[in-house]
Amino acid sequence: MTRRLLFAPACALICLWAAGAARAGDPADDLLRNAAAHGMSVHTLFARFTQEKTLQMLVAPLRSSGYFCLSGKGGGDRVVWVYETPVRSGFTYESGKGSFWSKDPTNIRPVSAQEGAALSAMVRSLLTWVRIEPQRLREEHVVSMPDPAVPSLCLRPRKPNSFFSEVLIRFAPSLRTVESLRFTDADGGGVTLSFTDVRLNSLLPALCDP
Image 1 (cartoon, helix red, strand yellow):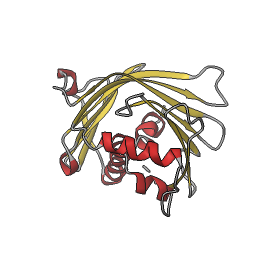
Image 2 (cartoon, rainbow, N blue to C red; image 1 turned 60 degrees about the horizontal axis):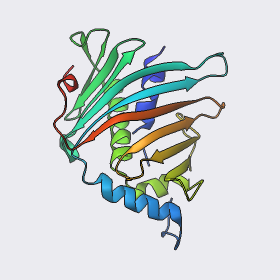
Image 3 (cartoon, helix red, strand yellow; image 1 turned 180 degrees about the vertical axis):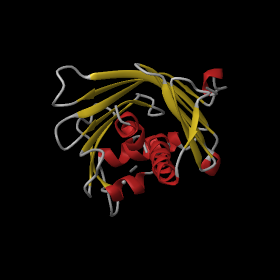
Image 4 (cartoon, rainbow, N blue to C red; image 1 turned 180 degrees about the horizontal axis):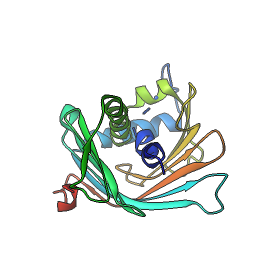
């Protein structure tokens, strides 16, 4: 599995809002504003995830699981993304610099300049999902709310996107966290990320220092 395939959800967990004034009475706008208000208060975040990737060439989906950690605020953010199964691997990003590791967290490989630019974009996108920026989302996506009774949003990029053609975001009832993300690509395949054990603004566990 290539690194791009492995970390594509994190990349896409890393961009976001439709140009123009908010439309009066639009439930998608209301949901974006409310979720953004909650997201601005996030200083630390830990969550476990399960990932399921579907490809037309595969009979069964590819499944993996792991966790991610976020600490800091603004330019001082530190992100740790770890796959625990089927193969241990991950990346750490802090102060504009990142590193990859595979199988053994002590086997760290610094990123190249090109990888660093991609990783920076990935982290920016991830932080955008955590700290939702309604204006940016509206500028870059057509945003709709599939079911007004369910706190969820459907985003379609306004410009061709190499990672996904559509993303469905489902929020927890509190709107403080995202329950799941479903990325669909142009070929009909996609990735679903489901989050559990979400901890906000609490002491991060020791495994956030792999």
